[in-house]
Image (cartoon, rainbow, N blue to C red; front, side, top):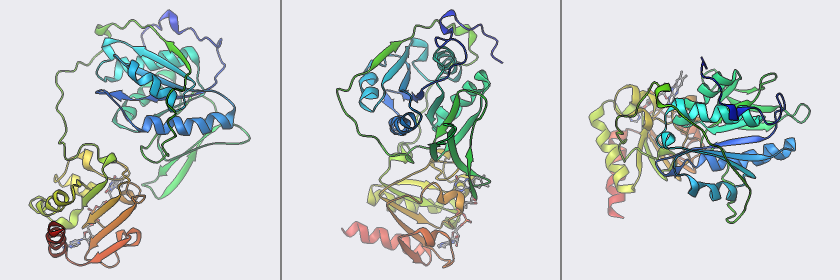
Length: 345
Ligand code: FAD
């Protein structure tokens, strides 16, 4: 429902139907760049090399100049910037409008963004405006050697199969990609490139939402995707009051509490603490799974953790098959015993 007239400045520079280049939308909020943006510049480099085209970064926000050298350092050859006070805090409509206008003007062949809350929100809005396809939540990307089309692979049918999707007709090809599945590229400070600043006029009265207040999430659950030690709970915990035994273990280890969708649906944890297919992907140094069965939708979000310890009273539980160290027994005895032992050290 893109009823707005397209500002004059978005007349396609390539002259209509020439789509070229790989773009990464760099997510910058509250003074921080989402690390997946840099992971995607690394991945974007491989795609651009396979196609034989350029790699660009796009930064939208307000007072964002400090991010520009970083984008070059992580491999962008060009950086497009839209810097405007209206973009200070993230909102779907102005962000979607700015990025859509840039895409119409410069016609990139592929655009990528992290499958973060922001990417999952703004990319569908952009795809709708551009009338193109979007493959959400990809875990693998590649280029088909013959057609040069983007191969977008993601879990499908509840994670039981991996589907590879091609966008044959419409442009650009758009994917959101899970954080932490692509490697972080080398950062080469001082690398330079071409900077393109776009001036936009926004009209606040065009937007249907206003930001009234920010309510931060619980510090203990924030940044789950960056946590080095995670103590995760499942329905084996039986009741919310029993969360205390896991929290005590997390406190002793300096770890972060997370859990399964079961634990979130039971109201024991918030959604930003959910690990798995419809939650966060994590890759901590240590993942302690307490009373978690190991459903495929949970495993896809944590199986690449460096070291997995699982506690379950069912010796057949799937989680024990991916665990480096499995303890078969009653969590109500084992977890307090572990906490007591760690306290001594
Ligand atoms: P359960 O499967 O009920 O497992 C509880 C475990 O605790 C059992 O293995 C049991 O043996 C053990 N246990 C019980 N008592 C004790 C005890 N006293 N001591 C030791 N062990 C004990 N799930 C996710 O986690 N993340 C997702 O992102 C996600 N996305 C989904 C998306 C879709 C489309 C669908 C269909 C499902 C999704 N799910 C997701 C749900 C998933 O299929 C499972 O239902 C869920 O992970 C199970 O949670 P659980 O392991 O806590 O519970």
